[in-house]
Image 1: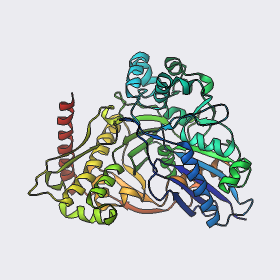
Image 2 (image 1 turned 45 degrees about the vertical axis):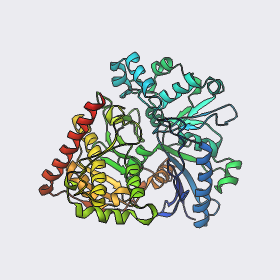
Image 3 (image 1 turned 120 degrees about the horizontal axis):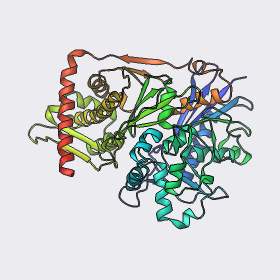
Image 4 (image 1 turned 180 degrees about the vertical axis):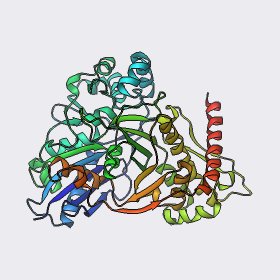
Length: 500
């Protein structure tokens, strides 16, 4: 009988399910729903919300599809792993009914609340105990609800992250994880537990916080009602959960100090692992509990994030013709423009406030445009170079923190399919790049195998992980790409001065 594992990845664009063979370590079938991007509601400037029941609907469709396609028989499925968009807030009542739309990761309404908390709680406490400013994370979003929606606040029974909500729908149980609480800035790293100071400052009822479980663990079993809707056999355990960036790193077997993972999808990220609790004094990059953290063997993940990554690339695509042009065609058009796009510069911060910009509203900017010289080729290239420059800005913050950044791993997907993007990334950051055949849903399935005891250790879980390509920088390109970055950084500094 086959041993199968199901991974579910709750993104802000789509919900993806992957069915993994534990025997071979290979994905049998994967499917994302919907075919077009899920809507994000913006009831006011800076707001971003999604209906959690929409995620649940697409979980049902994606799981039914992969289970049917693989003709899964009773007893074959051994565990379920859940990855999810980080920092979102879901609130439910005593009957597990959602009280309002989820305030998701790119919502910036609570920036001011987080800034005030940083001052009140004190810089020393926040940086040394929370390893972050409270910023625009989940705790601050919850405080916004308490201040602005008292009718919702009066009915709160539990608060959750998006993955906790999906686990609740599958199992009927409300639980969360250490890594999840740290991403919401509820976690005191020195105490290795909930931050009483954060809860007291924000007037958050400790009873609202769900039971805490390890990322790899038996976290509940699929109930009959969920089985009917998803096609998953009743009683199958949910045995892993993690936010998308810790999970993406896990999916690439980034588990030891000095290892790094990167993504360039809706947002662009670099996530590095360390065994000491590092922090950036300006909180431009953020430290969370990693999925393999234990009190005896600490493991932390440092995340830099650029919100305006995939959204800029898709905006360019719409501008260039939408459905009439493919991303491959765009990548081909970028090549003739040459390194530096003949002076055209894109500042890509057009998707809400950016953490690496200290939550200042920098915005998106196209600079140096010459109407007699520049074409769509230059614009496409400038956009890709601008995104990499923003990632490099964060990369150098991580280096200043003392992190070792030599080899970066990524799934062969999204913007890493672009030769221009890859070349810019490895030369601007002077790193090796390894591309793997994996994704977040496959990573969640591997995690489920560890949590359910199908795999005896992490190494066994990754025996089927396939390295597709390795790219090494050529030192002859270091100087040209450094000039591109310095030009970009100079324009950024000028914009920041104008905003002051």
